[in-house]
Amino acid sequence: MHPRGERRVQQLYQQVLASRIIQRRYRGYLARKRVNSMKFELIVVYVQSFIRMFLAKSQKLRLKQEKFSVVVQKHLRRYLAKKVYFELRSQAYDLMVLNKILMIQRRARIYIKRVQQIMIMKNQRANII
Image (cartoon, rainbow, N blue to C red; front, top):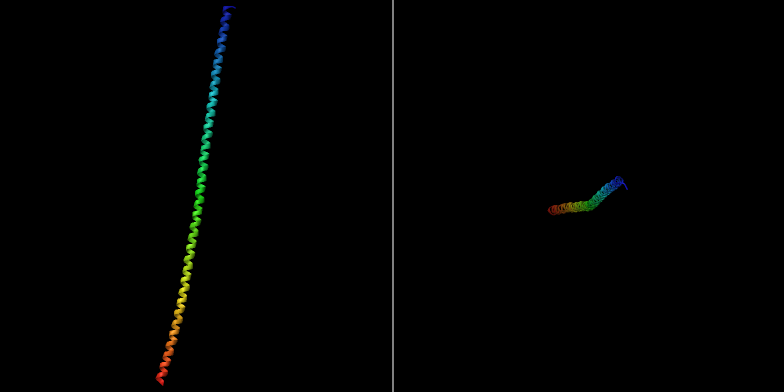
């Protein structure tokens, strides 16, 4: 083979090798870029899932607290209603007792007046005789 042809073949061979190296490096760069983007996407998905989990737990806790506060309010209202009921009932009983006492006092006064009138009448009859 001719020395020029041989050199030309050698140059072409080196160009092919150089182009393969460049292509290999570029493909490696693209692969790393894809892997990095996939890693980033995985990180984003992980962070999103963590945030969703946190929000779900806090929402569940808030609902639990609201349910608890509703139960506490229910029991407090029940307690207050019973307290008012028993106070009213006690006042009604006190009024009933007071009315009975007043009625007894009225009847006692009427009875005492009658007895006094009878005594006065007896005294007047005794004085007459």
